[in-house]
Image (cartoon, rainbow, N blue to C red; front, side):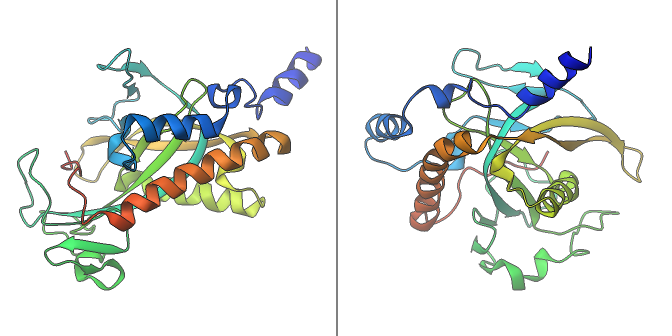
Length: 249
């Protein structure tokens, strides 16, 4: 029995079987370049996984084969990159599909009204929300997590809402405390039901460490990760704004 447990632990951080490890990352980059006629790739081009409403504990994972998505309780993979997104609607109850009055796809510079540097914006302060009973920010902050699963060659975007940001920050700090980068480990993401002060059920993301990726595999993943980051940051630099932001429902 102890031998089975030891074997299981030894395999936890192994990503050698991941689809991205079976090919050449440069070939993947060339395929993206050719299929998109040289355009860059933004986070809004990728399949997106959101936290369900009403306290649900299943993720819905869309794919080319199954656009409606597959229901799963756990996401297992590697965090390749993450970005802060900010969106502000003057109307506190916007119609779904309405573009925000101001948004930021890098978490630093807002485009629209009021626009400007996010760090100094009063709408980015806690307590600025105009919603009845709300104590948060008027400008919604979320985190886009580029998540590489065993089956995917291109990372999925896992969208962490404001209610999950504290858990994500704690997980990042816990990894830092062990001198481990987020892209050097296998991570599990699950959902836990919680209830807000108003009695409404919602879901929180739970992030769990599943093992350190062997150094040789980390070295193979490094150019892939660098290519993803460079492509995404190129789009942020060149884009005049974010027209693909989701309305917060």
